[in-house]
Image (cartoon, rainbow, N blue to C red; front, side):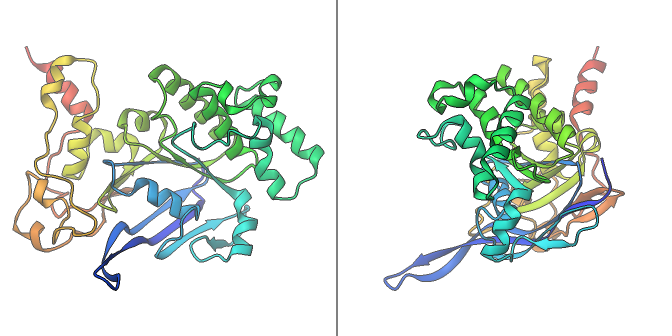
Length: 346
C-alpha cells in the first residue's frame, strides 16, 4: 500500500433542513454528516463502521457526489503527480469528466440494476457515457466481466436471471469497468447469504489488489471489516469518533463506543456472549444531539466534562485517533482481550 494520499476529506458536512409551520420555515437541521475529516492512501481500504443511521452511507455518497454536501471538501488526486480536485465543489461539466475516476457499489444488488437492460449494457453504460467507441466498450466489458466471475453467456441475459451474489458481481463489474482510482462500497455484502458474502469479499480483495484501488468500505458488520480493511473509522451521530489501523483498533480500542461495538463481534465460544456490553438509552438524534460528547448519555465512563465539552478528534498515539476526553486513561478491551480472558478462566 502506498503512502500517497489519493483522497483528502476535510470538514465535510451534510445537513438536511427541518421545515415547520404554515410558511415552511427552516427550524433546524438534521446533521447527517457533521464535520468529518480523514485521508485515504492509494491502494488503501478504509472500513467505515457504526450503528444504522450514523451517517456512513451519506458520507460515502457525499464523497462521490451522488448527493451534494453542505460544506467542506473532498479532494481527489488523479495521476502519479496530479493535483487534487475538490469533488465537493466541482461543477457539472468537471464532475462529468471525473466520474470515470470514482464509482460506487450499492448495498442492494436487486434495486441498483435496471431490469430493462442486459448485463452487457449495464456494465458498458459508464463507458458509453464517456463516449468510448463501441469496439473498445465491448472488449472492456468482456474483460472486466471475466475478472468478476461472469462468463460471456451471462452478458446477454437480464438481471432477473441471476441470484443476489451474481447480481453483486455485475454491480462490481460496472463500478470497475472505467478503471477508477476510488470506489465506495456501501455495505456490498449485507443483503447476501453468509456463504456468498465470503465469495464477494474475496473477489473485492483480489480486484482491489489487482487494480490498486483505494476503497471506502461501508459496513455495520465488524467481522467483515476486520477481514478486508487496512484502517477503520468509527462513526457516531454523523462524526468520526475513532480512526486507527484495523489490527490496533481491534486489539485496543480507544473510545468507549468502539469497545461496545467490539464486544458485539460474534465469537466462536457461546460463553463469550455474556461479555457483550449493552448500551443504555438510545442513539442521539442528529437533529437534536446532546451537549458535549454525543455519546455521554450512553457511556459508562462519562464524567462531568463529557456533558459540557465536545472532545476533539485527536491523535492519542501514532496513527490512532480518538474523540474521547479520557482516551489516554481508559483501559478498554478489544476482541482479543475478551477472548483471552475467557480462555484463561479455569
